[in-house]
Image (cartoon, rainbow, N blue to C red; front, side, top):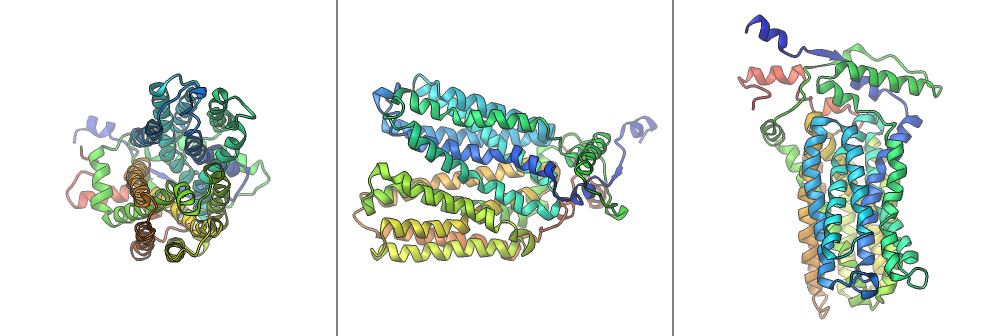
Length: 500
């Protein structure tokens, strides 16, 4: 290699940035991160529940749209497609351009899409704006999970990530409660009620985007992408903020330093090779956990209203009252069980939550088939089942966000998120078809057993090939692609670690 070429090669940097971030105690700085970034799942839950609630309203001519019932179904499909597109596009961009740029951009896209949905004048404008909102939320999943994992200290990462993912149900609950007021024509004219409902998310988002302006870029991302000096300044600023809150920081062991050669862009071929050739067991783990939890969730979520109506004679206007305790159970699971994923461990808690959800669902299936349940007891069993399933589902997002190298974290999250969405779409269509004309409980009972078996499978896979990631640094769980240790190992095999 010539002297000129050698001079242009990026130099290895030895850094304590990850260790300095992981040794931080919990402070108001971390609370700001959780509040500023965690709102994404609240917004998604709010969006999905609003569409579920306004579906019957916008079919009326008085709503200003008057679309058909079949066309209402397109709204959920288009939003789902938007999420998939957004996750794939912005997942790639968050790994290339940084977490901060993308969690500002994706929130802005959501605000525009959701806000304009309230101003829709026909079906096609409504579908277009729902697609835009879906893209924003899909991009949020990739950018936000990446940023939270990289900014939160290792000993708190599991509980924070799980609790934040679980707040989806706080948004769903907010959507239900808001719908009770805004969609009641005795309170607000039908033409305006559903439109105002779609402004709830943007109003919340405008508040949060102000908080996000004060959240720094991930110093881990900066370090691995050739911005080592900026990473040092970011960590120094964070440490000054923490010390300004009366905290004395301990020194960091020099032995915890990592050495990287910054790389601004990792080719897609390298991303695919690392995910599926270097970490095939982790790919199977992430795919199985995401597919099984999404299948169960969508199977129950999109059929529960029909089950209550067709098998328990619950009036459609009363269904939201049964949804409220269901949402509360889903919210409490991650909040109350999250810390155990950091203390008892990932594999043990994943098997426990997935397994208990499977057992409760199987028991409910037996009782449902025997006609031994009422609408209330059926809802109680669902609440218990999803108290555990919600924590398990959140741990699936945590798993795929922490078991792959930092440089492809956003893309890994996006990939498995899209697989989960596809699984959920299949489940929703399958279980509504199993209900049929409600002449027999047999087909749906079989469906419940299948859902329980899949959840048990997800838990067992995590137990046997899962990663003991609790309290570990992200760099210990998976070497950065740009680390000199990984590059040396790859060169020893005769390959270019960043070959195009």
